[in-house]
Image (cartoon, rainbow, N blue to C red):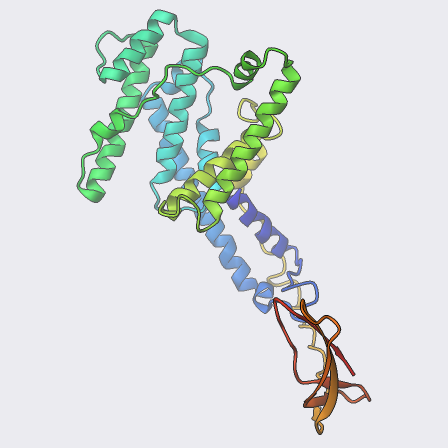
Length: 350
């Protein structure tokens, strides 16, 4: 998760861990030993935390006003939903996208619980019909609360869009519905289509299918020159963010339904401030490692260099040519020419 990774880098710098340009580099990045820069990164991180705390408070108030936190049956995942979108991507401080996505996730979670756990067939059908015609008539109790919350959310998003672009998208949002009512579990579909398969075979098939789909999504989101080249980069990043969120919640276990498995990460991302930078006043800056001494190069007279050519037509052909050479202080002469080719191989001999 991007936000927590930023914290890890800052905490690592606080402990004085060096970061090198490369394994064989002779230079350390000098700015990473600058306490003022680390302090700036720390303040930037804590500013994000204040923004996230404010938005999470707004999300909780919205959920309470809509009656979603008092349903009595649904999973209360308001904080989980906000943590997922806030930590998974580095959106600007003033981005409204975080709250839109978080509210969407809260609504989907509670609607899902209502359909799976509480609503009778008649109640579910009435609610589904109300959403299709976008009319609250006939709804009561939980169904009425859910529809009111959905309608309020759609109106809020549409008004925000109208303020920015002058276009009314209420009808467009109201018409976003699933084409099919209900979906059969993919494992059951595979077993139905393959009667000889057992449950382990079906699970293995679905896992492979999910892995292939994930790799395809990564390709579309990260690589240029694919079939969705005209898709805006912010849209690609949003899809990539969704993948990271699902990986976090469901990759190794069902952390979304757990009450405490993500609490530590949530607190570190939103509430717990960073520790003070211990090296600001208590440690001396470490000197840079000196670069290696450069050898004294002396241009000598032209020396004959034997080059053996290996090619597809004359693999044993040998020819001689003359190049200028340099001396590195030893008797060995190094030609002042390197030959690069994608089709032929040249081996230099002395």
